[in-house]
Length: 236
Image (tube, helix red, strand yellow):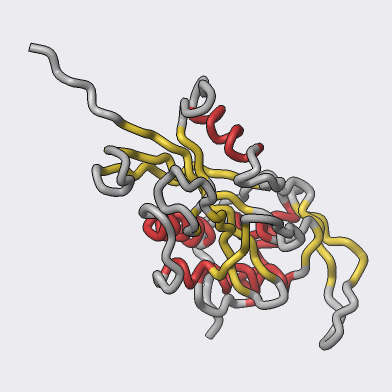
């Protein structure tokens, strides 16, 4: 007795995030689905591709590289990290499917064109903004990974330009963690990274429109994530 092979799809999806420094809000990149022959035509989704769809992928890393280079992303992504896998028989109306989910981070300077847009991540997490497939769920997985790692690592600095200030670092971590971050804790973290040779305290200061000028720090190895021995404290 032979078993009939049933259709199955595996994809790679990525949630590319940025920190909008003007609004101090974490935003996620969405792409509009423009193929009328595919599910959820006209709806917004996280960028993704089917593995071994239009071309053969040697492994999951090759599939991710193909996605990043495709027009579905099409911007330089500073940092990527695999978050997990989600799969079931209802997430895709075509067949049983699964996806490997990635987190991607860029800085605020990245602009989008065409069928892509930045939207507040909070709106996706609350389902105020509804996405195709189960991408609201995937966005939640991506956010949970980012927030948990920001408690004990420098990962949030990936959302800032290479040159930053202590106030900028506090703002991005507070936006991720949804609580005010103690300045003393952030200074201690940046000092530890400076001692490790990952950050340089320059002799330059910024020129803000309001408030005091602040020292500019340079992230010497922005591709590296530094891990601390305690979680980030909230301000009292």
